[in-house]
Image (cartoon, rainbow, N blue to C red; front, side, top):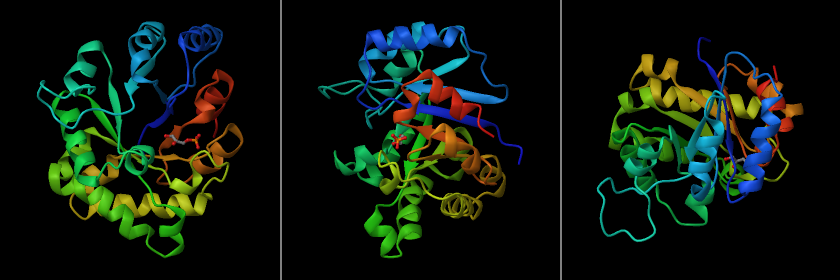
Length: 250
Ligand code: 13P
């Protein structure tokens, strides 16, 4: 397969200074798995603290969202990609389903965030995924094609050479219902084929993570799928034991 594995934790709106301290204290006694990249994305306010705690551990630190406008200015409450880059973040999640569905982010806006992130040297993790209703109506591929297609048309296929995609079916997020390996593989292969239609080489090298109720006991079968290159982990990334259990799976 030739692609490296990445296990990324999205802490969502969870955590505290105390949790960061205890998480990295627990981490000190652990040996990290070889050949697996590790990334954690805490709430924005804890980024500096986590960056400091993670220094020297081999764990990268990223943000959960970013402003779609690249230039500094009158955007109260927003944080730019340049600022994330300035403090040392390496990655940023864009288009998480909670941003799309709770905060109304459109695929166009997500593509602008993707572009702003790359302009500042951050690696965007583009999340895509269908709702249960969309899957049951037979529209999974249409939804994925639209969400990925917006980035392909705004940024070009070459932009995916410095990016990561995460397939997160909305019905599997925080529900305890994981996609079966067959369902995950089918979606990942479809996403890769969408990129391959424009650029085979970029498609072959693209890391596509699976997210949605990944746990230590189901990670190995998901990661064994040909087009699954790791995971984007919510709840199970808040504890060292489960986060590393997933990273060591397979
Ligand atoms: P859970 O692992 O809690 O289902 O969350 C997945 C997710 O949304 C990661 O971004």
